[in-house]
Length: 208
Ligand SMILES: C[S@@+](CC[C@H](N)C(=O)[O-])C[C@H]1O[C@@H](n2cnc3c(N)ncnc32)[C@H](O)[C@@H]1O
Image (tube, rainbow, N blue to C red; front, top):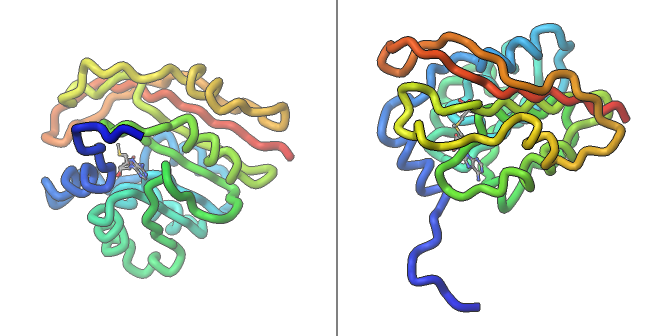
């Protein structure tokens, strides 16, 4: 195989540098769309893909879920584990580059919240593995940006639509669409600036 003259982009290095730029990158709060879906569910086993600094994993654990939370960044995972406190006994933080390896097991809830990356990421492959990890009766919850937040440096980036993402999963008829489409909300940016956001919300149930 010919070797390219440029170094291959390294997801781990990229995301460690990203998290290393600030003491805290995200708010620490649970993602709104995930909380809306989970609020009415009985706790079970959850898998959080691209968990970042652990806001969702810690919230799930506080509601009684047993959580496997994974990210490619050691910096983010260490921060998340430090924030978890006593709830750490309910969260298994695992390091994976999801293009290379994937947590073992079946889960009642598999969540991928804003699993976007500037480093090339075969999301369709990762999200198909995510669907395969959902136990019968369980939910796959994917939330993507519909467009870049107004405070983002990446306003030019186009995000795939919810239908396109669901189509890329090649799901069979054992799956039911609970919610698929954009949802809008007002939010506050990292420096306190108000902004209008579009979330592409995909909630899919595996029936058998
Ligand atoms: C936009 S952030 C979202 C973080 C978190 N889910 C949230 O909503 O706050 C994307 C996350 O995906 C992680 N990520 C990106 N590529 C990854 C990969 N190949 N394997 C595992 N995690 C990855 C990043 O480290 C980052 O924490």
